[in-house]
Amino acid sequence: MASKAQLFISLPHLPSPSKPRALSISCCLEIKQARNDQTSSSNKIPTGLRVAFAAGGTGGHIYPAVAIADELKLVNPTSKFIFLGCPNSMESTAIPSAHFEFKSIPAVKLARPFVSLRNLLLPYRLIESIIKCYILLSIFRPHVVIGTGGYVSFPVCLAAVLRGVKVVIQEQNSVPGIANRVLSLFADLVFVAFNSTVESVPRKEKCVVCGNPIRLSLKSPVEKAASRLHFFETMEGSSEEIKVVLVLGGSLGANAINIALLHVYSQLLLEHKNWFIIWQTGVHSFDEMESLVRSHHRLLLTPFLHSMDMAYAAADLIVSRAGAMTCSEILATGKPAILVPSPNVAEGHQHRNASLMADVAGSRVITEDELDSTTLGTAISEILGNERLLAEMSERALKAAKPDASSEIAKRILSLVNLSGKEVDG
Image 1 (cartoon, rainbow, N blue to C red):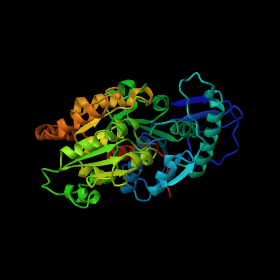
Image 2 (cartoon, rainbow, N blue to C red):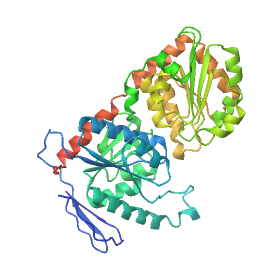
Image 3 (cartoon, rainbow, N blue to C red):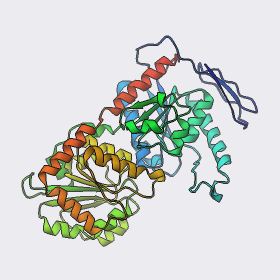
Image 4 (cartoon, rainbow, N blue to C red):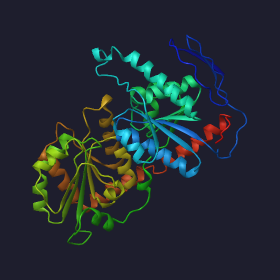
């Protein structure tokens, strides 16, 4: 069935990919693309698969993309990948660290509120970014483009649509953001983490509920005792008596959690001789927290945790924001949790995520208005002091987890490429 779209911009002459869907470009940029539902398909895994990812802004958008890429690489080692994101950003360092190629594109961030002077140049910046993405995609010639949400994914996926490339998006939150909601209109597949998310997607028939893809390292069992010794050289007492609290503020930190813990950590460690705290402050808050926190042999203060598999394995209780990926990792590792949803995240994503976590895993939710040293300290003590509650919360989390999400996503992407009838070569 043929679809037609128009965009009033001029583009330079660009090389065409091998066997694209019918595409013609004029000064008015008229796109006629034939989206053929091929009747013939192959179960053969393609070789030379090329995949472009649009991921950036926060770890919640970056790590799902990396997890999908890792899974595709496992299934199809000859695959080639490119990640597109903003320069001087979290993704510009995280993606190369994960050993994937990274290319920068102009940032196009929607200011809030929408009616803002900062959005006056948004159309120009969007067109500029789409052109840059179009050029990069023309050079790389991907068979599929995968967007994992955020403002970075918008121009990349639009450029893919203009170029006639298959588009897949993955939504981590319980309710899609603006970018993914719009992009779902053009996407060939929409992967969502929760059943309730489907109701918020315009084209429900494109949705696949499979959970959030988690990093490969979290799928391999890590011994608790060894993980604890990774963070603390000595631990006196039996493993049953020792309790470890893992405090996460997200990749950029959470000031409210840091302040609340600052005024209660000393009391917790004083009253409980077998308690330990691993405290990730976030990069931006570390220097301030380091100057205020007293050194203690049962407290580890760090700006960022690179060995998250070790951190989750070592922990008995997690105190965290309610980012979608953190929630999925909490479920996959079966950890009891205290969640403090951020009020600053657009469209109330974290409040919805926290509410779902409370329902399916029994996670304790403390709003930022309720959060202080007393409420945090009381919640930690109530959960860690109740072995039956710890076991119940852990069991519920594991039952709600979908640890094979990345595997299912990879299989469906490979199937989509096969069904498209495109020649996949090196």
